[in-house]
Image (cartoon, rainbow, N blue to C red; front, side):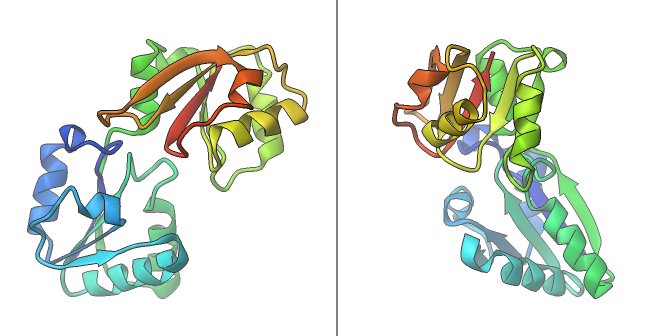
Length: 207
């Protein structure tokens, strides 16, 4: 029947769109991380996704959607380091007859740009998830602000960049736990990011 791939925003329920809420309400089964599912306490049936069983559970979701209504929750937007890519691969490999509907969401990258008043067309946006890290260094050195969705902590990311030739005196910002009550936006040098503690739930900007 239908598989909804639902972007649920950066974390706070304030950023869940009416379209996302409607898709979840229409679903018989909802898959998502524990943190994502906590935003929808009244779902019919919940299945917890974790890094260790992600592919297995996404395959289960796709199989169930052949004859039912299923939602897969994706933090931020499903199309940017989200679950859209692996679900498309699974459906293609298994040749499943499933209608897929993507519900866009507000990503942490979008919220980071908003907090720092960065126009999208004045910046580059990159993710460390599934990408060659060497290519990221090339992008950061092109003279434009770079918004980075890291796959590691901000300090580890900053150390990697410095070790690979990025100037440690470059100005940077860390947007931590965006949309949550304890959100922080900190501006500092890249070398300072390398020795500071931040949550893994962070977005980094190198200016």
